[in-house]
Length: 189
Image (cartoon, rainbow, N blue to C red):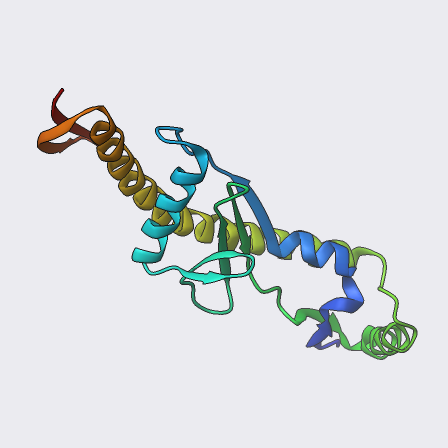
């Protein structure tokens, strides 16, 4: 009677670095309404994101994340770049009679710096793709919430600045209803 064993396989033996990079990252564009000139809108958005808890880095504004995940907002290029860590190992079950052969294949692949082929790699790829897609989706939704709130603040401030260019602002009122925000500005010309 055969026994089943759980073995851990280094992920780089199953999938190429290019495939691993694609599994763990995602990039999404976003738009900014041009209420004011583009550079002013970008500055206002950057200030709003910093006020929301993002930190400035060379690559863009980093949204606070947990567990090694990163969400980066590039205000100039108007993109959100998401990255989640890919597991270092893949765990699978093998039967006792093939255990020695599989271990030998793994050792040979590690020594030669190549990937294993066949069903094991295909199964790992499809399983990890599902896990990574779910994590990327969740992180994208979190980062998008932060960005949407910052865009709302940016538009509010841009509208106020635009109104001030027209004349003397005498009254500003805001109301929110059903996901919409209305800003009423009275300007004395």
